[in-house]
Length: 104
Image (cartoon, rainbow, N blue to C red; front, side, top):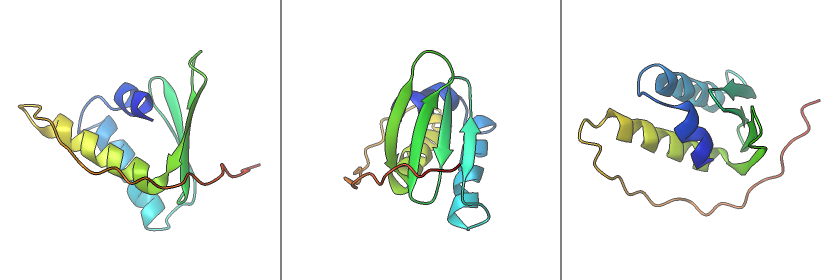
């Protein structure tokens, strides 16, 4: 997850805002699935689980809960917004990862 977020979100506006919009669309029920592609990864986002697929040779990037993904993206965008790039510490939820759904 971290490699996907750092590789695909470079700025709080633009790519950061785009990924946050996708999170809001999932949260509000506007959509139930987003394949958010960036520079190196595709983040498959559902209300329960988010999993990552490399666009090149990096392979699979594992899976996390939607809650974990949302926290990581929001925190990273907040970090990028800070002109001093001060560290941000947040408690990371230790959620069990749900199974990746079959979307076919």
